[in-house]
Amino acid sequence: MTTVDPAPPVSAAPPTPPAPMRLRELVFGAACAAAVRAAARLGVADALDDTPTTVEDLAAAVKTQPHTLRRLLRALSCQGVFEERPDGTFAHTQMSRLLREDDPNSLRYIALWCTEPWTWNVWPQLDEAVRSGHNVFEDMYDREFFSYLNEEAPESAYVFNRAMTTSSEQSAREVANLLDLTGVSSVADIGGGQGQVVASLLEKHPKMHGTLLDLPGVVGNADPRLREGGSLAARVTVVAGDCREDIPVTADVYIIKNILEWDDDSTRRALANVRKAARPGARVIVIENLVDDTPSMKFTTAMDLLLLLNVGGAKHTRQSMVDRLTDAGLVIGEIRPVNAYLHAFECTVPA
Image (cartoon, rainbow, N blue to C red):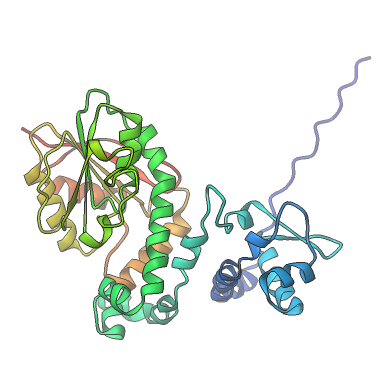
């Protein structure tokens, strides 16, 4: 008689904590965020290699006290950031590796950006922002958010720029792989930051010309590939400007990625300027996070609330994005996920 070995038992999902325990965990969420920030600033993940390490050796490497570093690492290990071994050593996990600066998918600067000093001041005012519908940042700091960053908080501005660059570099390759630009001779990246998206597109399509448009202080630090002497410089035009004021660019395809999350007036002006600049038949590809159609809703909805606090902006639902694009006179075609965080809205300019 032939016997069949029983199938291995299926590992059950960890039980959901009881409501009182889960709520207690939620209200201490600031401690978790602060612990991630501390580990990033101390460089703990960078000091830990592939071999499990004692807390004493880690403390010597990052210049901390061993007993307090153990407390920090234990709090993070409970969240899956680092692993505490039975012998008391600590090892990397998939999440802790993302805090390394040299990891190709590093989230170090994004972790720092989301926990910058100003964030701890505005979060307690969320009830006021919800009540009024307006940002609270300007009342607290007596100036517009980006003016504050550039004039009063250069370290925070540096972290912001590094975080945006990291995010753009990681998603630029996915955008380039997603878009079919066969036969396209020119592409414009509107509000494209330092130009990682347009650079990735130009590298993939060697006969195409690109344009990067963003604020003067942003394009002044454009990707080295796009600057004079860079590998793509001969095929790109860098334009300093504000897409809410004017878009003096003609192209076959316009890319608008993660900039339609300001206040509604700014979003309307930017889309109207694209509509005015583009020829009939031009493609307009809008790439945004959504708060109602993504596996990453916990992150995206949190960013949505932070946008309310600092600039009075919002992440979009699928329908709110469709409404704004339609109101701008664009014809919406396919809507596709770029990755777990982003969706691409393929639009055309009507005749």
